[in-house]
Image (cartoon, rainbow, N blue to C red; front, side, top):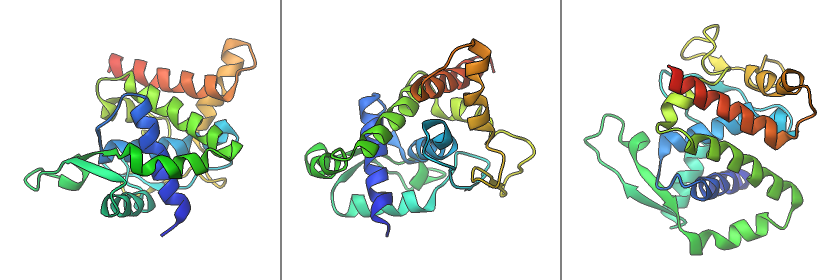
Length: 200
């Protein structure tokens, strides 16, 4: 298992906690991780990874493996799991054990790029926190909702594809007529998704 995937999972859960999203459903955690891939060019993190499109929220295999591992070693606590749910693994809720995860987060924060990445995740999590339903806001994402990409095909976020999410976020500078920061672009993009979800 990738050590980076484990750290990224802990960072995503920490961002969700700071945004007031805990306990968070597993599929909602995957949504945060997906948007961190889709908007990574906006934060100058390079191209994201391609993600398989599903009829529901996305699923990132490496994130799920990391989450399962963190549950087994006690860094993540499962709050709810019901085998009678239609998709019990996705509807399960969990939260980060603060005491057990503190050292991993402290070590990550000793690097400036990791502190910046946590700020990035927090902007995304705060955007989700503005909506009553994460599913509704997520399904407005420009890349994931693009009808050109059908279900069970890859949402192309890598350098070889057209990442519509980052294209939209980076267009705000021209629309507003000012040079925006990465945080402002991501924040505006998340606000756009929330506003579209309310209209729908």
